Amino acid sequence: MQVNEIIRGALAYEKFAIAKLISLFESGSPKDQRECLSVENAIYGATSRSALLIGLTGAPGSGKSTLIQFLIREVLSLQKTWRVAVVAVDPSSPVSGGALLGDRTRVHFDNEEQTFFRSQASDMDLGGIGRNTFRVCRILRRLFDLVLVESVGVGQSEIEIARLADSTLLTLQPFSGDQIQFMKSGIMEVPQAFVITKCDAEDLAARSLHQLRASLNFLQRIDREVNPVPIFQTSSVRQTGFVELAEFVTNASALSERADIERDNYFLRKEIRYYFGEWGLKKLEESLHLAKEKSFEARRIQILSGLNTGEFL
Ligand SMILES: Nc1nc2c(ncn2[C@@H]2O[C@H](COP(=O)(O)OP(=O)(O)O)[C@@H](O)[C@H]2O)c(=O)[nH]1
Ligand SMILES: [Mg+2]
Image 1 (cartoon, rainbow, N blue to C red):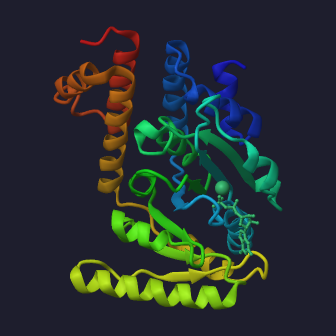
Image 2 (cartoon, helix red, strand yellow):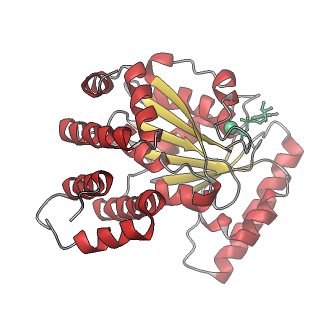
């Protein structure tokens, strides 16, 4: 597929073109990287749509994928015209290096027309999200109304996902011991909301809620800056709790413009370090004073093109 067909198709919301576009972003080849820049240039120029970006994290098996499926159904009954993209970041298999595609075959969306699903390999060196996850989410924000990112709940991924998303949800399954781990690693302070999943196990769920409230009260006592965070309780078996969660998600607000640029900068640096190392970062610093009058996007594309073609400065 030619780049201009990818651009046209993606803007027309053709799923095949969007899938091709993501593959281009995932490819490390210099030619594909240059094509990515054309795609970004065209899409950022063509639309200013900007989806809400919601992160979902929690231990493997805590019910994230299942939750997404039910959450999307409720979101679409509240926002009937929305298009929703899901990016699921799977643990890379040490053998194949690829994403585990299991989720796609299991997760079922009622509304295929308005939903798009993509599985991506994670990269442990980058804190558990893929090296292109942000760049992919960033462009998907121009094509959708809501982008949900499910991350593996291991390593530093909770922290990275919170940096990436406008709002982050943390799933906890009743009495799994996850809370204690999360307390130790400071992750309890990360999300904008907690979701206790599998609340069909009533007794365990009630005890889990009690324990979570106690932990959060404790955190607030030692640090008054910590804001009270809502706790949702869901059950996919009984189909409860998803309406409330959908209301929370659809009412979540996007980052302010300034915070958005800080986030763009953070991930741009990360990407440059990954592909071009310290040399790339040095070039980035040197170029910061150039073209100040240009928009962030124009400068970003200029810097990445310069690094990609090796014609930099
Ligand atoms: N009883 C019960 N099981 C659930 C619920 N949600 C998910 N599960 C089960 O928990 C397992 C892990 O779910 P999954 O969504 O794949 O978790 P993920 O690894 O966090 O994405 C699956 O066997 C699900 O069927 C729930 O609300 N109640
Ligand atoms: Mg999953």
